[in-house]
Amino acid sequence: MKQMPKNAPKRNNPFKILLIIALLGAGLTLLFPGNSSFFSQSTVEDIPLTGLLEKYGDDELKTIKIKDNQILAESFDGAMYRAFKEPSANVKDLGLSDLSKRTSVEVIDTSGGKIWINILIGVAPFILLVLFLVFISRRASSMGGGEGGPFGFGKSRAKVYDKTKHSTKFTDVAGAYEAKDEVEEVVDFLKNPKKYQKMGAKTPKGILLVGAPGTGKTLLARAIAGEADVPFFSVSGSEFVEMFVGVGASRVRDLFKTAKRNAPAIIFIDEIDAIGKHRGQGVGGGHDEREQTLNQILTEMDGFESGTNLIVIAATNRPDVLDKALLRPGRFDRRVHIDMPDMEARLQILTLHAKNKTLAPNTNLQKIASKTVGFSGADLENLLNEAAISAVKARQKNVSQEDLENAVEKVSMGPERRSRRITDSERNIIAHHEVGHAIAGHFCETSEPVHKVSIISRGMALGVTWFLPEEDKYLMSEQKMQEEMVSLHGGRIAERLIFGQTTSGASNDLERISRIARSMVMTYGMGDRKKVGPVVFSEKSKGWGGMDFHEKDFSEETARAIDEDVQHLILEAESKCEEILKKNLSLLKKIATDLLKKENISREEFLAYFKEKPEK
Ligand code: ADP
Ligand code: MG
Ligand code: ZN
Image 1 (spheres, protein in one colour):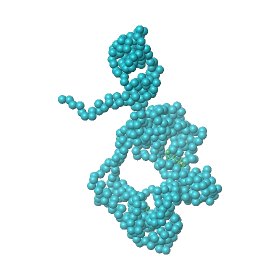
Image 2 (cartoon, rainbow, N blue to C red):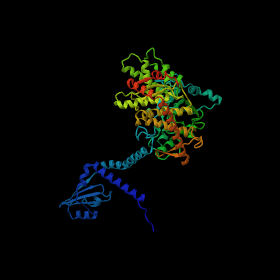
Image 3 (cartoon, rainbow, N blue to C red):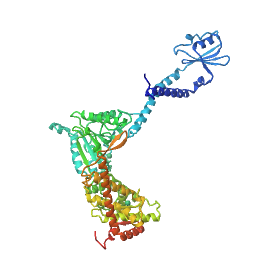
């Protein structure tokens, strides 16, 4: 015995289609109000065609209206009838042209409207389908899709960079010597391709610029084009991730075709990680699209003939997520790393961007460079701009050193928010919290010097203790991480020692502490070796339809051991911190009282408190 499964999907479909057709019909009727009277009579009786013709034969009918395959008739006694005919049958075929009858026969010509209806009926399902696809791909693709909507797809949106207008040169890129050195060769290749061909040297096809955001990757790519004096086709990876599968691929084709026509040229794919992610992970339309786009890029790059004077430069800050196929020889086999600027590079970037600003003669950019460890080129540019803006606001005639110093704080910690109303008792807690951080940090050997303690709100923070590194560092020792936790505990412990309880203000501190402890155990092998050992425990995140979920590569027992070890490290740091603050309780109170009055305490002022007993 066969049984239809419940809720068989097949049953659904015709129903849905019927529904759509019904809706369409209703919509069309509304679209043609002129004909609506045809249907509006509520007491129309459907009769067979023969019945209607019979009534005609009996001369009972006053009017007959024929529209398409419908015949609507009104009898002399006011009754309405409707019958259907073959679309091809005309008045004569039906025998309705009998002049001896009293009936007035009217044929309503719908051919004008018919075209419209046909077009609409033809197009409407397609439009619905398109809307549906858009809806689906919007949901499925985590990339969201670029601007522009569903029309005009297939064409590359590459922006051709007009070299006559703004020619970027290597001199516009400060610092980044190694990177510039490496790409210099590319410039030479674009300028004198023959030289290389004669020697039989294979020239690079693809260059991958790798670096943190704001380190000048886009800038360097422009500079390469500017130096080589060739057209520059720039497109962003996120623009490829479109709503229709296949559009990205056709865009890539188009882009390469245009570039080849203009060779020698540079194609620049910014943020390639948007399309170059590992294939075969995740599901959904966005992913399929990415894969096709990526494959097309690979095909195009493989397809260059040796004479093609075309170089593809791509930029990313996530080289780890790139598909391996992108990095194979003949593709983006050359990697150029752009580092965060060191002290000297920062000074050069500042000097470069200060050229078009009016600085006071006594400004010292060197000082600013030394205070901006961890700033990217873009941050530094932003800093100078902020300083200039505040100089304008204060109606100064030039940018002072103070403007620059304030801008450093503003860029690294957010703008001051003096308008935020804070009660006196809260200010009291904040002051002790911040001084707690400062003192705990001060007594840690590896801690950066305290640069400033402040109880003025900035961005999200209610107060700030600012430790400033004096030099660029590339390694972090175990001790440094432990002591970082000690100073982070300072705020909370100070609150507890002074007020007997802690507040919600320490949540960010605790978050950071947990992150440090967790990476010490899980990433750096600094945990208790008897329990967890020097192993990297990773929690891979897998993309699945735009969602991430985590997959542990270790057992539950190990997870518990890790948790215990993390806990242990955190508690250890906490008790160390408590010890320091208890010893310096009177100093804590004294500095906090002063801070309440002054709002800010500078490095010199802070150090002066420790002059009497130099026991560090
Ligand atoms: P990325 O593409 O690496 O995120 P950008 O190239 O867009 O960074 O840099 C942003 C801005 O920062 C640039 O327009 C430039 O003004 C400034 N900048 C970054 N690095 C440098 C540098 N090394 N020299 C000069 N300016 C820089
Ligand atoms: Mg960029
Ligand atoms: Zn804090």
